[in-house]
Image (tube, rainbow, N blue to C red; front, side, top):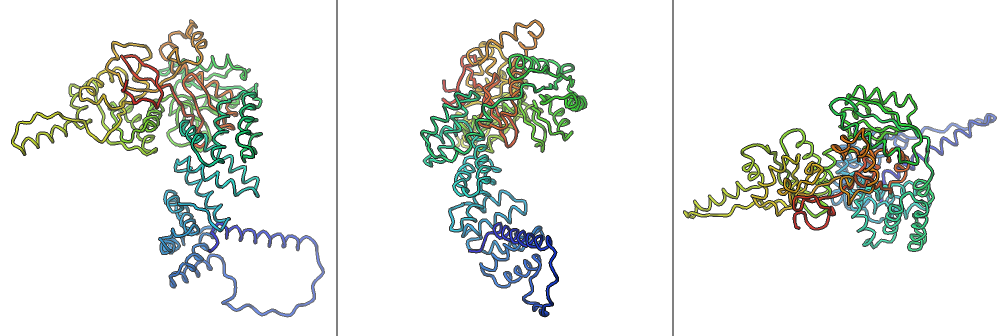
Length: 627
């Protein structure tokens, strides 16, 4: 088999380094002039070494004139070895397509095709061409293909398959300790990106002992948290089950990251709108941050607090001033416009943003948010995890509806679901029943009945049915709107379908008489609001008893919960970045850091309206609306 492109490039680099080393040795010590040597004739033109680009062109011409696999592979490898092969890629691409089985006959050819696609900026095509990556007699090729496969799978969001590739690769890297450690760190990150249920399933059913061992250790250390004794006990038990497992090499680093000491002198700056239209949101969030700082064992310095008034200009000025005043970490700002402005400064400072930026930042800030979009993403993840594959989206007309619809759609489809339909409603419209009926396909069902009646010349009284291509409904909006929409869903018999919403479905206090029509709707929320779910009821009582902020905390409890969790995470931010297995069991939900996107994903409490009252349920148990 012809050598892989990456392998041949490495050999060229090695040869160059050897030549450079010999050159440096020759220059280090002066030598006497050698005796005159007989003249050596110039090599014949046909045997003189050509520059790399000319050689690649020559082999391309040869392969194009003699269509055979060997010359084609040699020419493709020569092109891939060039520092900048852009202008020859299309010719190499045409040759690759003429290889046996359209370039997919061997792992070497698939690897060549993947590299050509990468250099042309088509990463999905690179992944498609490379698969499958099977063991190959060329060990170097197999190693390089596995690593490329893991990278492409990760970028495609296929985290479990990427993890499997990393575990297979690990067994090939014993002779390269640094490379192996980097690969194991990537495998650990991939474990942190898997959904909790997927992790448990992997740990229980995976036949590969190496992969199961990695998963078991990850779950054990997640359960141990930051308790040193629990960490040591978990490792001891795991070691008995998986003796000699390669993950043992990471235990020391994982222990330091999980339970090592933190800097108790860290100073935290807070950027929030405390006055202006968003003042109440900011004050409720600040109260949570202050409460977290007051109960923390790691925060010793007073908070630096800046009022941004919701202004991007003030947010940028406050961010710069916080750094000038010696802040080690920053919490905030709160709105997307403010976040975008802070990111535009280009300052790489440990910062916990409270909203997602409008574009993916290059600076690795992390994001902790309770925005409507985050609720919609949580609903999309949970709906797909519950087995739903075809969803109907029903949201209010306007910006809010557009934002949550996009977030649900992106999350649901990225996991493999399909959006069967998407409709906007006007909750107070006199035509609301017709709007809902049209979205559910009732109009089309009635039309089919009418057509059949005309064809048979009979007076048929059919029973219109809702569309058959949906198995879940994402319906959301403020509770006052949902109370107007839900009766029409039930009227058209859509209540038998699982219905998912955002936390806006619940106004934060039990109102069974008003909310009876919301029965069956399932939504994510902060455990802080529910006495039987709140992990810190004493703190909630203390905050609500404060005369200064009682009204804000009572009206905006979700933002107070966000502030509490933000304060705790900011205090230990370096720990969580270095130990992605750790969960934050917070009052707004359980948080996990996606170390690729630098976004904190929340596993909220899940509630379902039953008899007009939210009742606790698991995100994936009995289908919503079934009881």
